[in-house]
Image 1: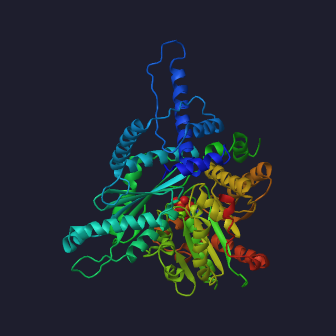
Image 2: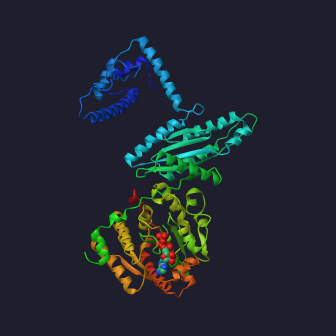
Image 3: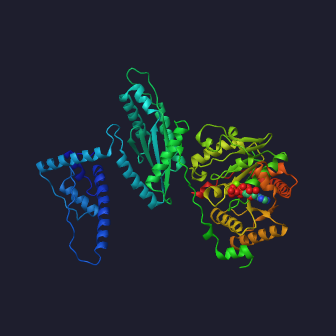
Amino acid sequence: MRKTNDDTTAEATSDQRTAIPEDMRDLTVELEALQQLLLQHSAAQSDNNAGGSSAPAGLVAITRLFPGMSIEQWRALAESHGLHEWLALSLDKSSFLNLRHLQRALEELAHQSEHDPLTGLVNRRAFERRLHMEAERVERSNGNVCLAVLDIDNFKQVNDTYGHPCGDEVLCGLSGVLEETKRAYDVAARLGGEEFALLLPGATPLRAKSMVERVLHAFGQHHFACEGHAPFACTFSGGVACLRGNDSLGIAQLMELADQALYEAKRAGKNRIHIARQRQEIEYDRSTMVHSNEKQFLFSGIE
Amino acid sequence: MQQNKTLSISVLSGKGGVGKSNIALNLGYCMFRGGFPLLLMDCDLGLANLDVLLGIAPENNMQNLLDSDMDARDIAVHIEPGGFDFLPAASGVPELVEMDAELRAMLFRKLTPLFSRYDYLFMDLGAGITPTVLAFAAMTHVRLVVVTPEPTSLTDSYALMKVLSTQHGVKDFYVIVNQAEDKKEEDITFRRLAAACDRFLGFTPTLLGGIRLDKMVPESVRRQKPLLKLAPTSPAAQDLFALAVKLQRLHGTMGQRIAAGPFLTDVAGNFE
Ligand SMILES: Nc1ncnc2c1ncn2[C@@H]1O[C@H](COP(=O)(O)OP(=O)(O)OP(=O)(O)O)[C@@H](O)[C@H]1O
Ligand SMILES: [Mg+2]
C-alpha cells in the first residue's frame, strides 16, 4: 500500500536523494515495464513507416496518479532512472481528489472483472491471460510450466446435504488452502462452479503433482462446521498437464490435457492427482547425429 | 556402507525391435536357472512390453512407488519361485530424469531394499535416444548394446554410443549382435561398429557375443514363454546361454569394483 502520509514524504527526501523509498519501488517497476512497452511500440512504428514521412497517427498522454509524491521527489527519481522525457504535473487539491476518485473506481472495476467475488481468487478470464503470458515466457526461455485443474469431489452432494451456504464455505475453504499452500508466484484461480486451477511456473510434472498433493492433503485436514450438521471434510481430484519450451502444444490443448487427466483421476476413484499422458521425451535426431563419413565407415568399413 | 554384490546391466539399442526385451528376459532366466536371483526391470516407459512377453498383467508398477507408500518388494512380481522377479514399468509417466534430486533420491531409497536381494539387475530400456534411456544406461555397471546386421540398427546403435560417450562420458560398452545369419555376418557387423567407434569416438566396444537368427524366438514370443524355457536346445537359446556365462564371469571380475559402490550410480547431475 502506498502511503499518503506527509511525514513519510519528508523523511524520504531528507534521506539520500537517489535511494528509492520502499513505497516507490512499485512505481519504478511499473515505469520500467511501461518504458519497455513503449520502446517496442515505437520500434514497430518506425518499421511500419520505414519509407514514408507520414504524420503520427495519434497523440496520447499517459497519466498515473501518485499520491504522496512531491515534484522534487519525482525529479530525483527521474534523474536516477533516466526518465527525463516523462512529464510530471502537480495537481491542486480538488482536481487531485476528483481524479483519485476516478482512479479508485477504475481499479475497483478492473479488480472485479478479474476476480471471483465469492473466493477472491482470480477468475477464468484473468487466469487464461496469465496462462498465455506464462506460455510465452516458457517459449522464450525454454523453461516449463504446469497447469493443474482441480475439481471438488461430490460437490453436488455437499450442496444437497448441507445447503448452498455451506457449499460456499467449502469453496472458500479450498481457495484459502490454495492461497496458503502455493508459492508466491503460482496463480490460483476459480474457473467456475467447483472447478479451480493452479498455474505452477517452472514446475516439472512430478514436482507439480507433489505440490498439488500437498494442497489436497491440507484441504483434507480442513473440517467444515455448518449449522445443524456434524463437521465434515472434503476432497478434490486434480489433473496436471505441462508445457515445455520445445513443445508445440497450444494453451487450448494444455487445458484439454489437464481436463483429461482430471477425468482419469475421478474415474480412478477421486481424491487423487493424475498427470496427463504426454509424450515428454525429446528424441535426439539420429539422422543428423551420424555424419556421412561415419555412415560410410559403418556400411563399408572404408572412409 | 554395506558391500554391494548386485551387478546392474542395461540392455539398449537405439533402434526398436532388435530384440532387447527377449535378450533381457532370457539372460535373466539363465541367471535364475544358474541359481542367481535376479530382478528384471522394464524401463521402457513408452512402450513397456516385457509384461506381454511374460504373459502377465501386473497390477502395480514403478509409478506406485512415487504415488503411494507401497513397498517396492510388494510391487515386484515373482515370475518363477526362488529368485526370478519382475518390476513392471511405469507407463505413460514422465521420465525419471526430469525428477528433481529429491524425488529421485526417494525412488532410489525405495528401490534399494529390493535391489539388495538380487545378484543381477537387468534393465530393459526403450528404443530411441531419449533422456530416460541415456540416464539409465549411464547408471548401470554394464551396458549391453544390441545390434542387428541391418544398416539402420548399426547407425542407431552407433548414434546412441556417440551421445553417451560425448555427452555423458560413458565409454565402455558390450555389444551383442542379434539375428545374424551366420558367424561371418556377426563378425562383419561387430567389426564395422567397433571400427567406427575406434575411428571417430576414441574407444573400442567389447564383443560379448552373437545370437543367431532363430525361428524359435518369435515362437517363444507367441507362446509368451522365455525361449530358454520353451526350447533350451535351439540355436538362439544356446547362444543366449553362452552370453549368460560370459556375464557371470564378468560379474566375478567386476566384483571388487561393484562392491565398493551403489547398485546404480546416480549420475543425474550430468543431465541437468
Ligand atoms: N535371434 C532372433 N531370431 C529371430 N527373431 C528374433 C530374434 N531376436 C528377436 N527376434 C524377434 O524380433 C522381435 C522384436 O524383439 P523384442 O521385442 O525383444 O525387441 P525390442 O528391441 O525389445 O523391441 P522394442 O524396441 O519394441 O522394445 C520379436 O518379435 C522377436 O521374435
Ligand atoms: Mg522391448
